[in-house]
Every structure is written in C-alpha cells, then in structure tokens.
Image (cartoon, rainbow, N blue to C red):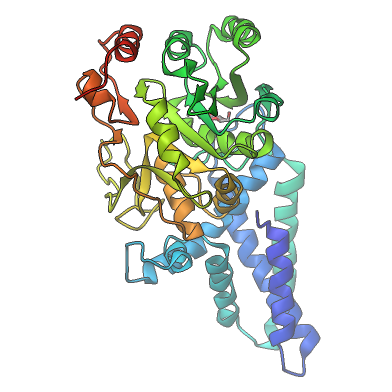
Length: 428
Ligand SMILES: *[C@@H]1O[C@H](CO)[C@@H](O)[C@H](O)[C@H]1NC(C)=O
Ligand SMILES: *[C@@H]1O[C@H](CO)[C@@H](O)[C@H](O)[C@H]1NC(C)=O
C-alpha cells in the first residue's frame, strides 16, 4: 500500500533532482509547498464532505481508505484522456487504463508540477497561506476523530488484516492433501454443510490422492449472533473442517471471503497442489476432478468455466452493476465463474500480491480475473467443455459421470441423488 508519506518523499526527491536552476532552495521548497497545498485541498474536501459520523473509527482503515481516495481526482484525469475502454493484452497498460496502478497516479501527480507559478514575489504570501492550510490539515488529521469512510457499495474493505476466529492450522500439514476443497457458505447454514459432508464432501481418498474439505465462513450478524457462534464452536469440535474469519458474512462481501480464503491457503495449506473454491449448491464429481488435475499444469494454473469478453453491466438495476467511475472499461478480462474454480497453490501468493494494486471490486470471480490479468496469466479452459456447468444439468447417472461440477436444482434431494449416483453403473 502506497501511503501519502512515501508519495511525498519520492515527489520531493524528484523535484530536487529536476531542479537545475540556481535558486534551488526557494524553488524546491516552493514546489514542495504547492504539492502540500494540493494534498491539503483534497484531504480537506474529503473530510468536509463526510457528514455521517459512525461511533467508532479505525485509524488503519481510515488510512487505507483515504490513501486510495486521495488518488481519485488524479486518476480520473488520466482515465478520461485514454481513448480505449477495453482491456488489451498487455496487462500493465490495461491496468493503467483502469486507473488502478500507482505508476499512473504518480505520473499524474508529477504533471501538477508544471502548473505552479514561479514568480518569486508571491512566494512569501503563498508560503504563509500554505502554512495555514497545513495547520488546518494537521488539525483535521490529529485533533478531531476522523469519520470512518466506507468504500461504497461497489468495493469491499480489502486489503485488511482479518483474523481467523475458528481455524484448522495443522490439518494440511498433517494430512498432506493433493487438492483442498474450499466451500463458501453462510455461518448459519449448517444444513448445507451437513449435506455436503454426507455427499461429495465425504470422498477423501480418490485415485490415491488425499482430498480435503473445508468450509469458509465470515461472522454472523444480527440477533442470533451469539447462538450461531456457539453452534459453530460445537460443529467445529465435531468435524474439524470450519475456517471462520472476522469479516461480516454477506453477499456483498464475497470478495473479502475469497481473498481471506487465498490468505488462509497461503498461510496454512501451501503444500497442497491445488485448491478448489466451490459453491455449496453444487454437485462435485470428485473422481473427475482429481483425474483432470493429475494431468494439469503445476503452476500458474487456474481453470473453471471461463467467461470471455463478459460485459461490465451498466444497468443500475442489475445484480452485478458496476458504475463507470469504478471500472471504466466495458469488457472484463477472462475470468472463471464463481460456482467452482481451481487454482494451483503457487497462485495464492501471487494473487494476494496483485490484489494490492487492484481496487477490491465486490464481484469475487470478476475480481480474481482482474488480479490474474494484472499478473499476465490467462485462465485455462478445462479439457472438456461439459466439465463445469453453471446451469443445472438434469440428473442422470450418465450425465453426472461426465461433469466435474454442476449446480443442482434446489428441489432435488441431494443426499438421495448422491446415493443413487454412487450405486448406478456409469455406462452411457
Ligand atoms: C502579502 O499580502 C499582503 C496583504 O495580505 C500585502 O500587503 C503584501 O504586499 C503582500 N506581499 C507580497 C510580497 O506580495
Ligand atoms: C463487509 O465486511 C466489513 C468488514 O467486516 C464490514 O465492515 C462491512 O460492513 C461488510 N459489508 C456489508 C455490506 O455488510
């Protein structure tokens, strides 16, 4: 994360280096102060515009939000001058277009240098004015509680150091899985977890490879918070397959869940070869999954149902609406749909690093696509086009023997389906 201080430092360094005129001391200080003035104005506007004052605020989050916020006026200038609105094949250029990279921002900042007047007469008065503004800013920064700034409806609070409330830190080390199944499910949804434990989640040794199942949860909020918490502790004791982190678990926060999942894999399961993120309302053919992965690339590998040239939805009524000021380009880079995707474990660290450069969009699968694009790694198509199905495949033992993952209609009894599938011959 680039903090204003770092920017400050490099900016003043650059001015020092660029200044070849005799009046070095005055000019460099002049430029420096002008920059402070710009910074102060932006900060001041940010703070003055915020009317809502939540009861508690967190300085760390504030810095994260504000250091990003500070860049917006400059980033926007940059974006409007670009004449393309699509991702091209060159990852960093595309990221610049999106206004997401720090390079773009500092370039824009440097341009402001040229606007500053250079008449020495004004320096003294300007200096006094600037000092006043700085005093004002320091006052705002340090003497009044600064309101916590929400990232808005289209971005989530990430990066942030979320903690694990329920954890299984030793499991991977002990069991050495080949592939880890990470199921994202709401804390209160024990019924879904039990169905999965009784169906495809029960397959833990396939083709001589260890398959390990975990459920990933955030925090329950509302009236039943305490009750759910106690139930989860009990459930965790019984099954030892829950990972819970301290962010608010809700649909809008799925990107946080996915990033926390990558952090967990990176910290506690990096010896596994692959991880699969999978939704809870699905059927997983674990045999086909392992078979596919035995022949898959070992690194820089991400597969699933790949969406190509998906349009960024601009209808505010849409469930996945993203306004242009959040993402100016009209087409997403290729990404694997969220129902179930697989990645090689080397990618977890790389994606976390990439996420530091990309604003955390609330659509989790798209967001991973943006991060992957930043890395210059394209997702890989699965070897069979029927392997991943976002539309429910009508159940038959034959059809289900060809898929890796498909969604299932909610009226189908999934425990019955699993038993039936396991007991039928697979000849088609
Ligand atoms: C600074 O401003 C004051 C009025 O605020 C003016 O009287 C004075 O001449 C100005 N000094 C310079 C150097 O421009
Ligand atoms: C998402 O989680 C963060 C961190 O816990 C929380 O502050 C925020 O309110 C949550 N978002 C929603 C829409 O609940």
